[in-house]
Length: 106
Image (cartoon, rainbow, N blue to C red):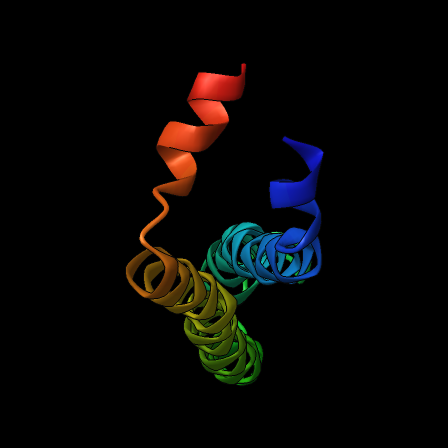
């Protein structure tokens, strides 16, 4: 089974890294939202006075993070679709169903 996995290992790792980037962007956004509410709207660190400049700056950072997260999602699909195309071409060109062959040998 390793001979089947080895040929897709690099693209699988790349897809996993892009997925990690997407999840990381989502988690960072939660922290930024809490800073917007606590510091920008409620003014917890500034003695109760809201800081509109902080809200704008953190809001622009969040937009940038959304764009980076969207890029990670899009780039995650590239290696996955590439693997699907390779498997589909191999299956139709040589007539061998790899999945059935792997399960048969296990």
